[in-house]
Image 1 (cartoon, one colour):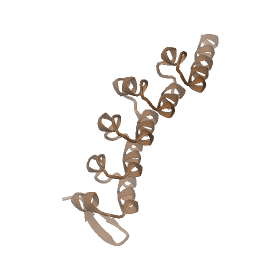
Image 2 (cartoon, one colour; image 1 turned 90 degrees about the vertical axis):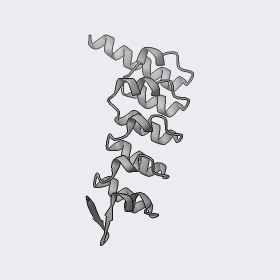
Image 3 (tube, one colour; image 1 turned 30 degrees about the vertical axis):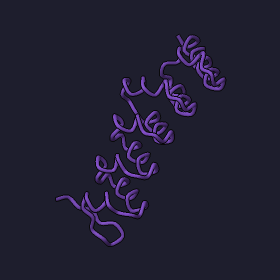
Image 4 (tube, helix red, strand yellow; image 1 turned 60 degrees about the vertical axis):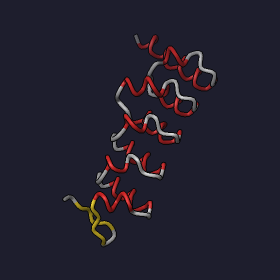
Length: 130
């Protein structure tokens, strides 16, 4: 059984999942410990930290919290998952996808003018560079 010592206490994966203190669970994520178990953590901050470690994106792409989905959009390399996020209801999630240069043609007509402007600018720069 794998364990991790945090702040003088030894935790198993099950202990980390049941730990009440969010900062302890965040420390576990920082140490890349129990990431797959913490994908379902009650804290959006912990789930975002897991997404930054590029773990669990296939689940976190559907997270109810837009900040978690935005983190997935920032760190995800899977085009299938980015396809899900390009149609997200939250404009910040779509902004992150557009900022990464993904599906720019779709974002040219986005309802959010900032996203549309970013997409047009990035496409223009691509055409000039080509």
